Each structure stands twice: as C-alpha cells, then as structure tokens.
Length: 208
Image 1 (cartoon, rainbow, N blue to C red):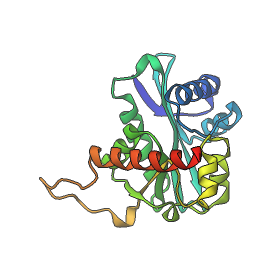
Image 2 (image 1 turned 180 degrees about the vertical axis):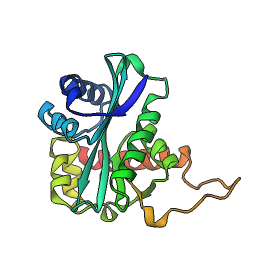
Image 3 (image 1 turned 60 degrees about the horizontal axis):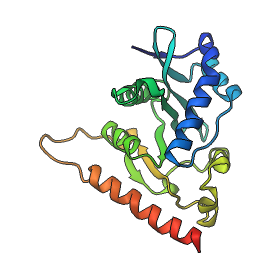
Image 4 (image 1 turned 90 degrees about the horizontal axis):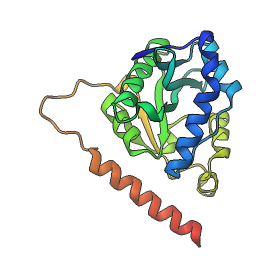
C-alpha cells in the first residue's frame, strides 16, 4: 500500500473518489458537503491531496484546503474505499496529510469539522483540540461549502455557532510536548458523549 502526494497523473480517480465519499455518507446517515469530480481534479493538479493506492487500485484519499489567506488549513474529504476498511488506513492517510499540511503551511492553524467519532479520535491523537466554531476560520467560502449538508439548517439556525459537527483545531503556536504517563482529558468516551449530546439536542429541536 502506497500513500503518496497526489498530482495530475491521478485525475482518473476523481470520479471514484466522489462516489466513495457520497456512498459512505449515505450509508452512515451523516451530513457531508458534496464534492464534484472537477473540484477533486483541481486538488490533484495543485498537489493539495494525498492518495492511497494498492497497485493501480484506489484505496483512500484526503485533500488540503487553505482558508483566510493561508491562516487556516483544513484536511477534508477523508475517505477509505470499502475494500480497504478496518485496516487502519484512515489513520495512516490522516497522518500523512497532516504532516504534509504542516510542511506546506508551517504557520497555519489546521482544523476540521466532523460528525465521525473515528475521525475525531484520530484528530485528537495528532494534536487537535475540540474548539468552538468561533475559533475556526470565518471565511464565508468555507461555510458556504456546508450548504449541501443535510444539517445545514442547524448551522444557520444557530448563526454558525454550532452544529452536529464538532470543530477541532491544531494550533502550531500552542504545541507542547506531552508529559509521559499523563492522560489527556478528551478520551474516546468524552468525545462520544459530546457527539451524543449534540445529536440529542439538535435532532430533538428539528422534530419540533
């Protein structure tokens, strides 16, 4: 399995990347911003993505998006093809794109919003911290990308302060070397509880 920086030679995978993202979101019943092949191709051509391949077979993908004139960077579109799931590939892809983002944008804050507990856990292990949406980019183009998500009404109803997604942020200016044998406060149970509380509150209000 190879996880490499993608380029224009990988544009033939654009359609399967989009299809895999869409099918995965439908199966999980979660909200997700839709991506078009044209959008993915642009990421590939600009070398703002990583792709996982086994030979010529598509296995996984994730891309970089810069916001606020490079002050913020998001690692988005993380996906693993069904044939390669439950092998720890998502974590490996996430680590590669994370390190690549730090290399390309050394001063940028790296952030993400997700409803997926597995992604939240991976982010935390990389050094992300759960934050409020006000600490993320205020670039309107980023939030406009949420319009195709089925939970967009929640985002607009709360004046973009919160949603079912959890915001997570890696701030390079606040990185500290963790002490040995000290457990972090945001373990899996805490993250899962946070996700469940948000779902209970917002879905209950939506039914009303």
